[in-house]
Amino acid sequence: MNENQMKSNSERIFYALGTLNQIKIFDRLDEQLLDIAVQRVLEIETLMSAFKTDSDVSKINQNAGKGFVSIQAETYRLIKRSLAFSKMSDGAFDITVRPLVELWGIGKKKNYIPTEEELICTGKLVDYRKLILDKNNHRAALRDNGQAIDLGGIAKGYAAEEIKRIFAENKVKSALINLGGNIVAIGSQPDGKVWKIGIQNPCAPTGKYFGFLSIIDKTIVTSGINERFFMKDGIRYHHILDPRTGMPASNKILSVTVICDCSTDADALTTTLFVIGAEHGMELVKKLKTEAIFVTESLDIIASIGLKDKFNLFNNNEK
Ligand code: AMP
Ligand code: MG
Image (cartoon, rainbow, N blue to C red; front, side, top):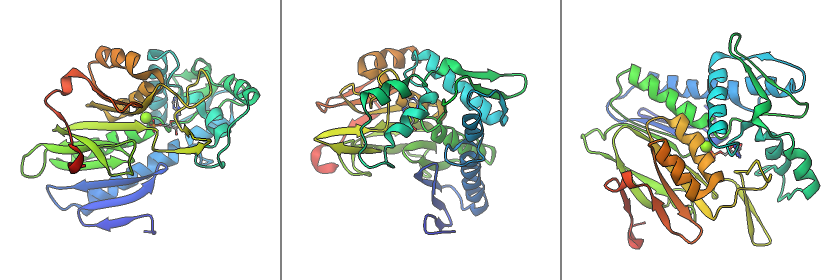
């Protein structure tokens, strides 16, 4: 254990996938299962991080323009799911966005704004149609030199879904998983009551909520401008990029929350909705028969109809 980890007999708090994670079991003490869950997240990080040189993602990126590389079946499946979201959103969600992520260096470079020329040049590398899968051999290839993939928009959701699976196999009845804002509420509270899950206020520090959802057995995922950003000349540059412009997506949205059954899909969908905006976003939400909450720049809160009895706003002095 290092300073990034905290261990209690019912909970693990640890750093992985570029974020702080918390896993807590409520209906029993099971240290071994908690450790298995943490290990699973670390395994996924080892396979899917763009920063680990031996990961599947790095192997694909290092071979861009050179041909297929063999990857693990689960990386293959997650890339395939990512491509489904790219097709569904006409490229608004695109894991080949990595060259732009690097160009901006949000959270790494210091307040760097690329030139128009850099944006055009790098933007040409972003195209999910040039990410080719070989389904018979679990192989993947990027067609052009300089292309690269980044599973940052979907991997946390996948990891949360994997812990959900492990807990279900071990008959856990009450648990909360929070991987950097990707929440899975398993079962109900230990006394049988519904979970009340706070929704992050995108204008306030982490842990400040504007409302809450009353749910049982659901995943709640939020993407917001408050997660990774820098300010320059009064403009906020955040980490969700519009592949069509190369710029941080600007749709007058501060955050998007998706509520559904699958955390992988919820993660990809929040990033997608952030790029396509509230109006088209709500159409997609309806089409997918899922639920979402948008917070706009004018602080309007737009919630899908299915949340009518589940979503409550805090009044100001409750927040
Ligand atoms: P999230 O916090 O889940 O919305 O994911 C944001 C992360 O996904 C960023 O830090 C990037 O690594 C990656 N990303 C940024 N823009 C996109 C995009 N348009 N499509 C897919 N992934 C993206
Ligand atoms: Mg996401």
